[in-house]
Image 1 (cartoon, rainbow, N blue to C red):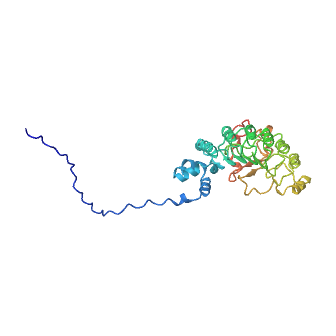
Image 2: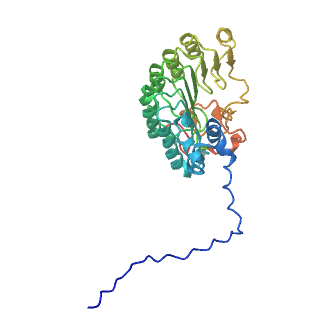
Image 3: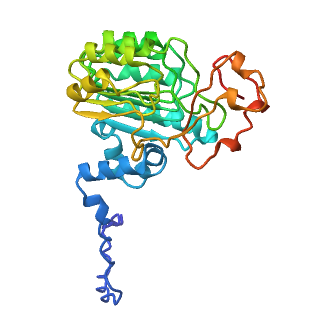
Length: 341
């Protein structure tokens, strides 16, 4: 009987591979160095962004690189917020949204904020609810912030030291509540004269001309710096301020033409106040442009009947390149606030 065949399993080995010939291509270049601005200290970068502005920082700068993104999300970057809308109505929504984002990113560390030509009641309340460390508040040309709004939020600013109001509505109650709620207030500016909403109206004339002065005197005893540009108060109101604010070091009375500093009141002011600006002093360097145009309806050849309602003794302009004749003030009607439209 034949023997069965035996099968042997063998692993077939691959033939040795030839060594690859050395490549003649150069090695890839090293990655480019980081842009020089990436190496800047965070404090300097944050300072640059503040100069660029909130809107451009949020819309553009923070998206350039990771380091800038981190700086723009650091709460310390937003301790100071300065926003100035160039009176562009189309940008109003952008400024409101950007301001809210900036306040949120401060995470309660906001200490100073300036809002020009775009604020409203809702935004003021939003800031107040998230910024109890605020020490400096400035509002300029905020037509949509109504009287009483500052009083409603004053309790949220217990550390407020400086309040500057320009061309923005403020009531006697606002002044009283702010004085009582913000016991550390040292500097107060109030300029509500001039035009509201661009070239549309004159300041409202007041009947109780010393009410604001009395409210300041009774409720802001710690004031050291006070500016009442274009205020209608008389010597009675000025004396009340001198009595109620004994710590005053500087007092700006420019364009307060109902005040007479020729007699004893003037002597007292110069003795008590270190830095005194008188009603007729130059306005060069003032934050807003200013020009006065005196007008008395009695001097007009044609009495249009306005003197039956208002006594326009002086008009405060905030646009120095415009003359009185540039305004056809009789072409519109008076609104409830005493402005021509």
